[in-house]
Image (cartoon, rainbow, N blue to C red; front, top):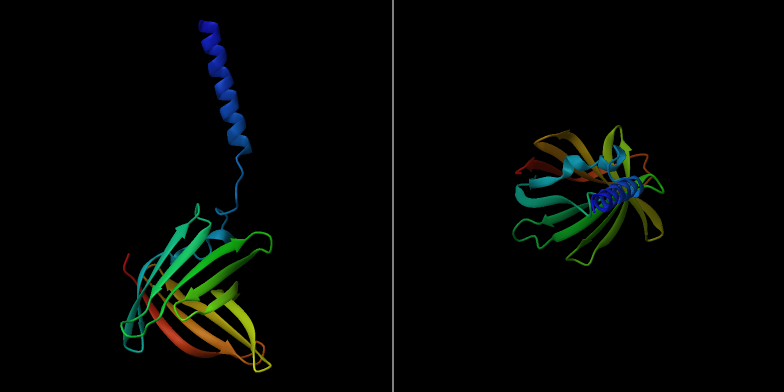
Length: 168
């Protein structure tokens, strides 16, 4: 009986070790996959005298960043984004949807070391680029810029500058 118990225990240990060796890693723990982790938390946003809120969490085993934006009272803008690191292209991707019916897709990048999400679309036959830029990132605050370019990204104009203040 002891031999059978010892054999069963040994088989269990071998199976556990083999399972641990073959457990796939999804790449959500690499430095690049954590590039936007600074954003995770609860934030109070200030823009032109109005206050809104943004709650950023990680989901799906830490592979996805979920944004839940609540607009200032009276603005009627609430939205959600999901962002993830695409290992195949080695780029970040973000999709934004909101209660106005907007659907925007972005690709992550960098502007002088500042994290960005950028997209391009055509309006009236002209290409327009838009981007979000995270600047002056600190543990308790950051600046978020919404910018557009009508010359292929050579120059950018800022439409919104939002101050983030960490609540949690």
